[in-house]
Image (cartoon, rainbow, N blue to C red):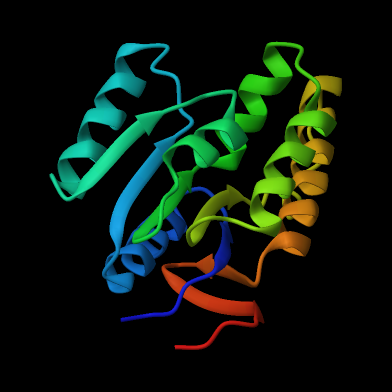
Length: 176
């Protein structure tokens, strides 16, 4: 069994970050609550969501919440459980596209992470290592994602970067 606190798992697209995060949760031996931030806007996304659910199996309880993430963590978190949030990048996209107050929502999430009821693992994309986006919306998204990742990393006890399925621990305050 692994002693989890709050862990931020970062990586690029298809880096293995979600698989790594799910393994952290499985290794904890706690009841798994999966908070999915993705909205099934088209057939391809619905198929992805169905595939991910099938891969996780029945041991996981899935809660879909594209916007009110802190409220979902507060509502769903309980002793003996671990929350996996996958992913902050899609959550940020929903907030931006809906014209929501990103700073306020981020603060609410940080407030939860400062004193969570149960261990929480959050997955997020690292988008600042590639090309500069050619649209103002793309640049704004990249900048907001970078700020969000910094805020959550500051709240997290552990931060791990995953590349090619391999973890690189950047911050590790909790130990096995």
